[in-house]
Each structure stands twice: as structure tokens, then as C-alpha cells.
Image (cartoon, rainbow, N blue to C red; front, side, top):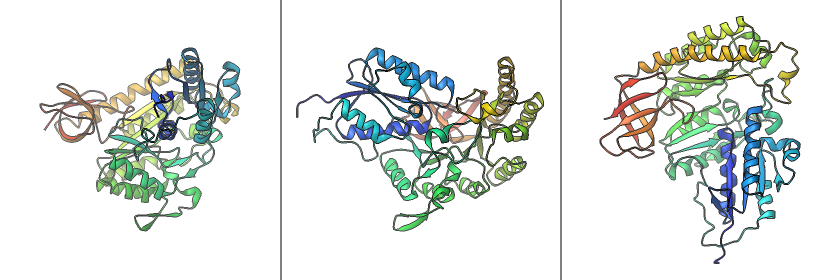
Length: 439
């Protein structure tokens, strides 16, 4: 009963989907009495949840493993890089174990083998919603694993398999627990959110004594009735996404869609094998904004994809000006080992040209974003507070997701706490952020 609980240091790398995997592993371990430590040194072992999507992400993962081995020596590796363990074993032959993505049981089993749990019924308790690595007021809600798309630049299906949707009743029960625990914002994530339920033919699931279909629209509608902010990420623009826009206008879910367009040129999109690309995307965006004028679209793009010509890139810049997307990020193309894009036989874009196009792209988008955010000046908007401060707190508008979009800096005479949703009068704006006063 008085034995010291075994301590584990945890490193979580990669996207929010990997973060949810980390939360599930930690929840399982905490329920068995393991303690978490912020330091590798002094811990009984280290778990590193890796990212293996890009070479730069793999390098970061290998660096994290190396640091854990240097500072501790007892290391278990999991995550996307674990799907191809040879490259890790070659560099670090003395690891305790390597498991693949979504292999929660394998990770816990490896911990048990290296560091058996010490059961104590008085401390082996976890909150009903599990252990979260995000701040208390927001949480990621993962609705599915894997992906059915076969984009030529991506190896996610190879790492994580085809689409596997969670039954909607299970997802909604998790969301309900999070809300009861104080979460004010749910960020819905997956590899392909709008394909939710396709693999199980939108099978109904029991929720609050009634059947609800496992489908994108029904998910948005039900989450929208929980009284918290609901933000949709990784939404491919399939036709049925149109059904969700009125829910945004009604205020049930946030007027925000994260749509990974990746490019606009038909030639590049064809080479990328992108799903749901169509010539009428701009028309759909206009119709969405007619229904919900407050709608903000976030997207990511790749510049310098093999075969991208100056004409293709200029087409993208012109499309960007017409689309007027509120939040945009861009990446310079990186070849990923095992991705079909490596075998397309298309001419590679020189690194210096990729760099030049990236700067041109970001400059064009900064001008668009600046015009959009300046239109917020003088208006009162709701803001969720992320960080308190003596006189100025940092928060986000309904058009901004944490860590990837802009911030709202809020001056206030009264103390503001993380999770507070306050009305803010916007006084000024820069390219991406807003500044205002709580009213």
C-alpha cells in the first residue's frame, strides 16, 4: 500500500489524432496506478508516441527517441513510425519495445512487461472522461481511424489502415462525459471527417433511448445540442457537407470548416489523386457563405508538388484570391518514403523554386487575411479564453482553432479564466490576430 507508484515520462508528437492516441494510453496507465512525470531523468521508463508522415516529422521523432535514450535508457516507442520498426531498431537497438499506431493494448502490455503495475485501490482512480493532454476547457474528439482515400503524397492508409468509424452512440457518450467535466469546446477530428460512417453504411446506434445514424450530419446535429462550441476539422468537401452549413447559421455548431484543399490546379489535383476535387468548388463556397455569412474556411496547401508548373502555381494564387479563405497554411512538398508520388515520373520542382513559391503564396494569403480580420474591427464577438493574464488575456474567436489559427488578445478590468467565453469589442487587427476589450 505504501509502495511508490511507478513513474512514466511521455512524449507525444504529431497531429491531434496522435494526441488522442496518447490520451487513451495515458488514461489506461493512470487507471492502473502509474504516475506521469515531466522529466525523463528519474522516471522508470519513457514512452515516445512518434509521427511518421513527413521526413522532417520522422527526424523529430528520432531526435525525441534519442533524447529519451540518453536521459533515461528505458524507452518504448509507439505511433506512426512504429509501423516500420526497422528504421527505428537500426538506430536504437536497445529499445524496450516498438508498437504501431492505434496499438493501445500493445503499448500497455509492453509497459506491464518492463514495469509491472503496483495496484493500490486508493490511488488507481481516473476521472470519468479519462486523462487529457489539452487544457481543461477544450478537447479533441476522434470519431474514426484510418482513411479510404489514396492521395499520392500520403502514406496514412499504409500506417493506419482504411476508414474505421466509431459508432455514433459511443462518440456522443464520450462527448457528454467531456462536457460534464467542464470542456467548453469540442474539436472533431479524424483523417476524413465527412466520410464518417461510410464504412459501416451509416449504421444506426443507440443514443438517449433513440437510434441515430452514424453519419456526419447527424453527428454535427447531436453535438450541437450539448451547449458547447463544436469545431469541425479535416472535412473533405463532399456534396453532403452542404447539409451542415444551415446548422452553423442556426448556431448549433461553429461557423468553421477545416478543408484540406491542398491545391487548386486541375493538373496538380489529378496527380495528387485528391478526393472530391471538382471545378465548382468556388461556387459551393459562395453558396455556403450565402447561407452562413459568418462562415470561416481553414485550409492547407502544398506548393512544389512534382510536376507543378509556374502556370499551375499562378492558377493556385488566382484561385486563392477568388476563394478568400479566412485561415490558410502552406507546406513545401516533401517526398515521403513509400508514397506513390515518388513514382509518378513527374519532374521535381527545385528546392529554391519551392521556397520562392512558398513565400509568394504566404504573402498573397497574408493580404487576404489582413482584409478579412480588419472587417472585425468595431464589432463585438464571443471569445473563448485560453490563457489568463494580469491585464491582457489570450483567447480565440469562433473562427480560430487552437495552435493553428489566430488569437484574440483581450484587455479586461475583471479577471478572466481559461474556458471563460466573453463578449469582446475588437479595437484593432493585424494580419492574423485581433485585439479588443472585454465588455
